[in-house]
Image (cartoon, rainbow, N blue to C red; front, side, top):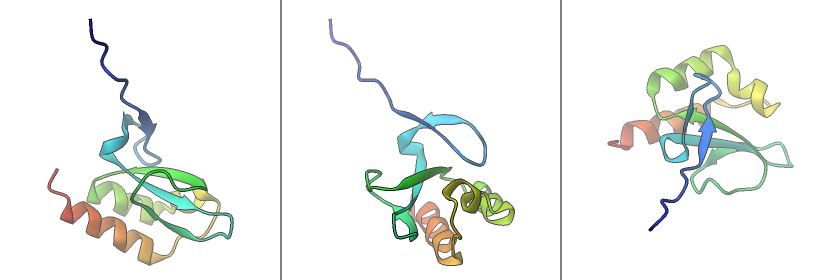
Length: 91
């Protein structure tokens, strides 16, 4: 009998939904206070997950949710990078 591997779940900071890690994008703040998008999902630092949806990313930007969760100021470049990743991803 083969056992299926457990799917890691994470919570989106905007929608508060528990989703598989592959359906989310991770944003990280490192020790130096720099905020950036984590493509690998394994970088050191405080992380926050956002659903791969333009509406969700725009809502996070408007309500400054990533600033609150990462306890740092998130630049517009990070939101621009998030939006471009969502538009480039066909899934």
